[in-house]
Length: 240
Image (tube, rainbow, N blue to C red; front, side, top):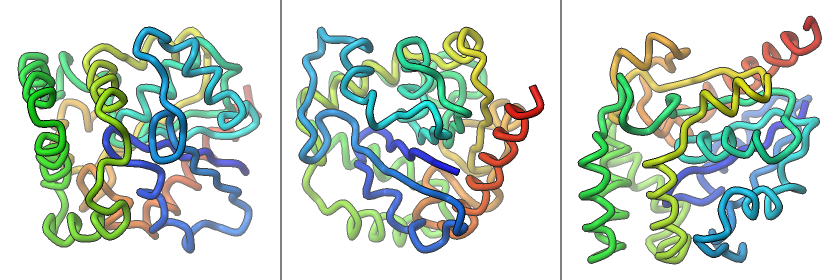
């Protein structure tokens, strides 16, 4: 069983490292970076999703289950309109939208203000967002220290890539691409995720005792849950 794990805004693929020793033996995992993160060449803002799809084509095979976390979930869903669909898509820590829908705690106006402030001081705002998304963890300070040990203190992507990601958070939605592709999907959201409320949890499988970053606070349980969820999606595909 192949899983492709995709990271979110402002954090690269190293976020998945805590899960590495917890995967069941039959699970084959890859963790590609999005364009513009770490050593991966960035894209021009004008290139759009078609260029992103071409850049990620080899990293997103159709014989795998894609697991997108946070912005990575919205990007993975959007790419269903441009790439052969995978055997399943698991959205971790993301509803059908990031903002502008019931259950989304970040309003469209707040995200616009964040983007304006980001352009004035990108690193300060990136750090502020990291702290906010860790706010639902049982020990957020410890989670922040763990994240810093994983990814360091330097931005993992350039400012243009990060600003483009904020635009994607404001505009992308998952429902349309999922419906058009027919791709089996599942949604997993931490029960204390500070970015979403109970209205979103009602339509998702909640992850007990975690917030937006279960990779840091419950890696063993998350690995088991992702593997089990992927198996269930594959069983759905096989019975169709």
